[in-house]
Amino acid sequence: MKASVNTIYGEPEVLQIKQVPKPVPTANQVLIKIHATTVNRTDCGFRKPEYLLVRLISGLFKPKHTILGSELAGEIEEVGANVQSFKVGDKVFGLSTFVFGTHAEYICMDEKKAIALMPNNISYNQAAAICDGAFLAYANIQKIDFNKSPQILVNGASGSIGTATVQLVKHFGAEVTAVCNTKTVELIKSLGADHVYDYLKEDFTQNGKKYDFVLDVVGKSSFFKCKKILKPKGIYISSELGYLSQNIYLALFTPLFMGKKVLFPIPKDKKKDIELFKELIETGKYKAVIDKIYPLDQIVEATKYVETGEKTGNVVIQIIQ
Ligand SMILES: NC(=O)c1ccc[n+]([C@@H]2O[C@H](COP(=O)([O-])OP(=O)(O)OC[C@H]3O[C@@H](n4cnc5c(N)ncnc54)[C@H](OP(=O)(O)O)[C@@H]3O)[C@@H](O)[C@H]2O)c1
Image (cartoon, rainbow, N blue to C red; front, side, top):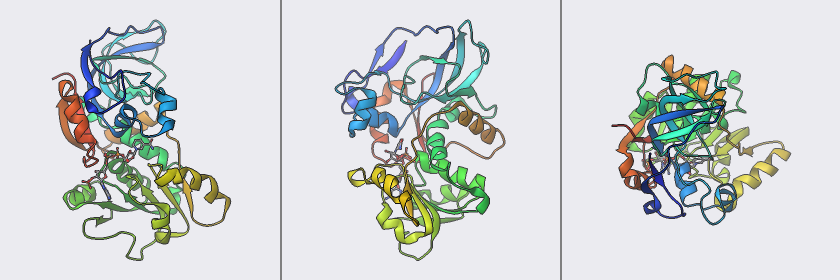
């Protein structure tokens, strides 16, 4: 089968399209013919690790997993002898976070992993672009009590995690203020944001409004900059470690005191999250935002675009044209 392979860490050019053996499912696995996947920031972070923590997971000197890609939408081609929940021909979507392997024509996955039947109202390209942003966004909002109709500010609302966060917190009942740039203001309003700041025109920390939560899903701000816009017991959550990995330390120490604090949730892909996303999509409450679509042969170009940090939503790799 064809796959994008990287045997060393480095710039996007380490990704090479090669022929590799097609995987064979074990008794508890399904073989999925991948129709579409994405290039996301997690792939980039594991292709050229900046943090020692990533190398501890993915190999100190060279990658343990030589095919990147963590999202997929495809069709089940074969099932192992013990598989109960899927059958040949089922359309599925989901995540293979930290194990990767979706930048390829086929992948084998345990039926219990984070895959589910695909929503019945979207294409493979759309389904491939659902899970990474949504699962990271969902991990960030686990501690929020939506019964209290919290006021939430989302910084970086136009990214993969941002577009997912805006939709999820709005759906669960928050009043949402989003921060993005001029070109995405209308899109972000259409996803449900009640108020939008254009960061090219206005500094969201300067107008005196206060929030129960600041979700800095692009990591361009900090707890110290956002402290003044948090309510007395307000919480700051970032998807980045921050300067000198400060968000880890702040998440350890600020909860020891009363008052404003930092949380740093560790995301873990779960089947039940994928099933929730399926339900939200089928009931029209969630949609994937797609910026560009590339063929697998152009994975280097796709990766370079993702690494600009300026994509809107998601970048899809369409494996089957
Ligand atoms: N914690 C984790 O496990 C984890 C996993 C994956 C990613 N991440 C990190 O989470 C962050 C977001 O990921 P993502 O996948 O959503 O990234 P992304 O899709 O690349 O989105 C980043 C978005 O932020 C916008 N942006 C850039 N500068 C901004 C600013 N100053 N203020 C507000 N928005 C700004 C960009 O659009 P414009 O430039 O057009 O404004 C872009 O739409 C990344 O830093 C990534 O490294 C964390």
